[in-house]
Image (cartoon, rainbow, N blue to C red; front, side):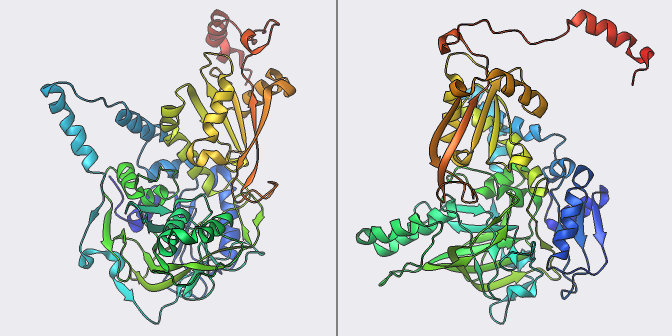
Length: 515
């Protein structure tokens, strides 16, 4: 069954022996992060941590590392294997248009199930996130916002579900973007230029200034979110409304990080993962809906022509991302549950909690990758490469040049466009076994022939690229080479024992007592 809210999830973690309650007083400045970092790098990712005695914040516990192991990711999505969710997606994708009355009748139960995924709006009186409503005399610093690393520019909200609405289509988007706290009422909004919320901001800007001021829009697009303040006059409407949700049920939090296409709302994805609709409630001061049973909701707006320096921030690359200008979020109202739980995360040198979240994304979205590239057998995004730096892909090779076609297909596919290095191997290579991958790559390539380079967009966090957001990518074709690819020598078979010998040795292995 789906978890009703974060508290229901915490009870499940506790019952499963996956939660450690920390009763020692700890400081939200650096100490919580250091404890969590050590735990996340321990065996199997360490436990989820509930800090119940946070210095200066009596009655507001902090939840960390909630997704920080394979077991907890499976618990969060209520599955025995992450591939179960991929199987559900495949079942949806395999549905064909019914032919005839009987086939249409057979589809009715499936259509009813799909209907369960759509979010539903409930009355404010039934929404737990409305237990306390503050429209004045509020401060985000009344909550234990963390500073994670010594050189961070300040405190950062690190696990927010940020809700915006597409000005053109009216569809909601839920994304996860770090937010530096400037003071009690304002924060940064780290909207990297390729993210959906950043495009919503640009669409609002285009609508506000009209086509004659398109150069100003291009100037904002030219920045990281950008690198200079842009002064515009006579704006028709100078705001984009935003709601920020902290502390939701695990499926909703996870849905905020998935690389979904813009036309698919994350609340629906959460409903699909939960197999139960997300209950929403109208905000108090902005025209947006948020999860009704969230712990904390920040309502407000981003001004279209206001940017402010944000950072540095110790990021999931293992390096600090340095200061750049980004939009500013102004809070107009805070609503929260009584004695709210503050949910956060820490990123840094892997492995950390986000590695397990990334692995779940990898498994769940494999069927969607196969829609475009059906020859893909499996993919691996190693945690050490922090997701966007390396993708290892096995393919069912049917023609010459197919590995290069797959590389280019990946670089044209949504957030996968940021992938710095793509390695393509044959279908009989287990991409999850990095020793096997290393063997194939080291032995199967002629570097000059099998490595290709291209230029294109790169992640904003890539500090090594020649320019911000733009740089080179590398593809390695480690598949067996064909004559049609210009390889005329014999390709040797890989060493493997015959099955009959393996069977005989299996039968006597225990008697040999070798291990």
